Image (cartoon, rainbow, N blue to C red):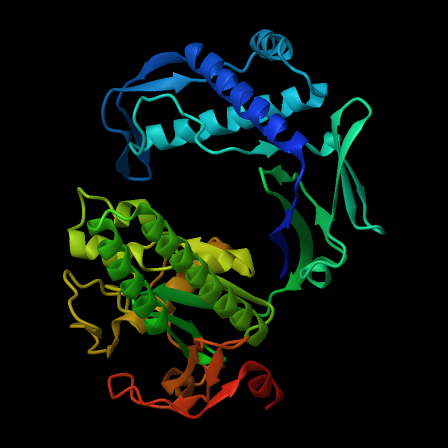
Length: 438
């Protein structure tokens, strides 16, 4: 099976130019004017409850009467909007097109959140200074590694990424639409890679670990305790700064926590991609905003859910998602769904299977993805456990993965046979490259 992996990396280049501040000031003002004009022309219509039949069941698509915003998209309105913005435009005409496209993107994002009940009927406000540049305003020289941005007719802004620390990382990549800020320019680099998929790993995400399963490997345990410890530490530091009213100190801790979390996830994702090449990583299709909702979760549970890095691997690896319902309550051997499940041990009252709940969920996640790809009807019996060509000894092997606090790559623990319900004693640690050479 051939898949295309789209990769995007963004790096910033510092810049000092008085013209940039003037451009951003005009851009932000024009962007807010465009949003105001689009907002004033939004039409609202009522959507009534709707029930449809799927198979033998009746499914409720909309359960109540709601008002739906209709964003104006006709040519006459867009022409009127462009003409209005061109009145006070001292820059090239394509900058107005960039403003209109960004305004529509912001309003459409608000509409999606509003229909899901996550945004109020309040007009979006631009609170950050930036300017998104269209590709028609850019002339890229890949040999000289420079970008020439048109400001006005005959006036340009030149940016170079030659001799930067990330130059070797983006060799052969293409440049996307840059974002200009007061003191720097953010350059997105894009690349695509053809991957011939050889294996599929199902992952169950938990607060302290990621648990995966693949028959030829066995179980995979990713330790997230260092990440959680770091986040708890910064939560305490931010609480002290907030209690003392020191906003600058709070923002400093918040930025440091965000950077260290991103560094941890990047190291882990890159390490797993090096270790499990030509692999699709399947996760549950979880919505983090529902998991941290005030209406659905208690405060302590919301904090624990907010610390979990949901599906960050999609930035560097091939990922897919499946329906999360009953993944940890369904028996991977016989398909029986238990009513309640507490603790970390899954026990099936029908077939007597007893194993770690997160490992059972990883088997079910992988199975659901494969059955969905084959377009077959859902059949739970004997679909998750090894078949004749997948020896059952693989179920007793577990590979441990952990990111060191300092270092360039994660540590891979030697695979070992162990009791799924016993003490989780680790083996001797070694580097990813050493493991691949074995």
